Amino acid sequence: MPSQTRPGALFDILSTASGEVEDDSTASGTAALASAAAALAARLGAAGIRPDEPVVVSVANRAADLAALFGVWQAGGVVVPLHAAAAETTRAAMLDQVRPRFLLSDGELVTLADVPPPERPLLRGAALVVFTSGSTGKPKGVVLGHDRLAAKLDALQELLRLTPLDTVVLPLQLIFIFGLWVALLSLRAGARLALVGKFSPATLRRRLQGATVLATVPSMLRTMFGEGELEAPTLRAILTGGEALGTHLSGQISHQLPSAGVFDLYGLTETGSCDFCLLPRDAAPGRGSIGVPTRGVTYRLAIDDAAPVTAPADAPQGELQVRSPFGMLGYLDNPDLTEAAFADGYFRTGDVARQRPDGFVEIVGRIKEIISRGGNKIAPAEIELILSAHPAVAEVLCAGVPDPRLGEALHVAVVLKPGHAASADELRNWCRERTERFKVPDAIHMVDGLPTGPTGKALRAGVRELAQALKP
Image (cartoon, one colour):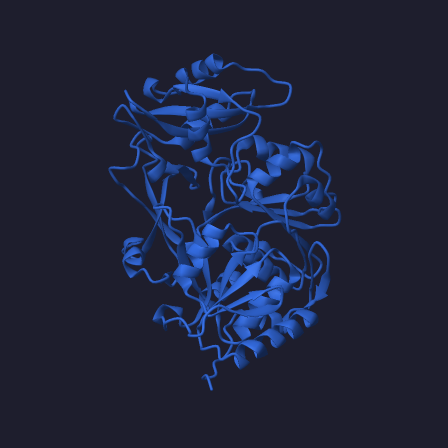
């Protein structure tokens, strides 16, 4: 018989929850979720699951997915979320790294191997292994602990104050930390949680009727506003993050949804998410920033040769490094990468930031995205900020494109506001009047929409692909 272990701290959420979860086809009370979770836990126990054994859970933003999460936790296992529609290469890469024995899909327990995976000390007390993109192209398994994530939910509840009267609409997938913590926090608060399986403007518009809280990324909001006026009369809060909100989008929200306060969140999976927040009350003075640290989080700016040095003397900038008591336990099976990710206990975000004189922290760009044009270093976010201030520009995205003469040339994709016009030359002149000559874009491409990745985030690689496609 396998040794028994107490369910992790996150399981307690379901045991005390009183809300309801609905997806695209069903609605379930938390009592029904608890019953389904118990049944799955019993099946895992009968199959011989070991304490802290990873179990892959196939998710598609269904109520049953949450029952599967809690079932694994009740059985003493560790959840590894995998999107039900993941590409075969993605699925194979994850399974190769995790080497799981069990997979839960649509309420069914599938046995993938006859022997359990190796025991991993890192997984003791772990709740989740969330895979994120790696700089080398190989996904990284971020191991998150029960106690740390439960404590992070405490801090987030203090910040967001969800209640049983809230209806939280969640189009973010449960394979990402943003979607996961919103779902867990909603259940813990006793709110009604509305899961959206596949994002579309029409679906989300319907869901927003009666919603009080929306958790989303800016790209989804831009798409929705592009479909015309947005009505959400009961919406009181928008939780957003993952990419810069932008002044144009912020203005659209203020104009069309004046009662919806925006919580603009910044954080990484590795740090437990939501390390900084620009609160609704700070929207005007803090525009363009990520706000201030959330409870328990400290940070520093590490000056590095890779960081730009063009900031004024009263606003030094460097790599944003974050220390959080809610962060990851480490990367799965990769202690060297785990060690390299930290400096003196601070996680190296890879983002270049500065602290403004008003106290707000502002992201300037990414160290790995810094463009080296003729030996000069350019932060894409700096150019994006300049172009976003042009009255005709709605959205902008910069990237470095290989160039035989300069090493990298600065290319920009621009979306104009409806009813406005501006030429590439006009926009280049706009930049020329506001920044150094070497930062003026080499090429500006007018597009109908910014290129995005599978998570809906604006994708710099898409600008490079566009530039390459337009080569003569």
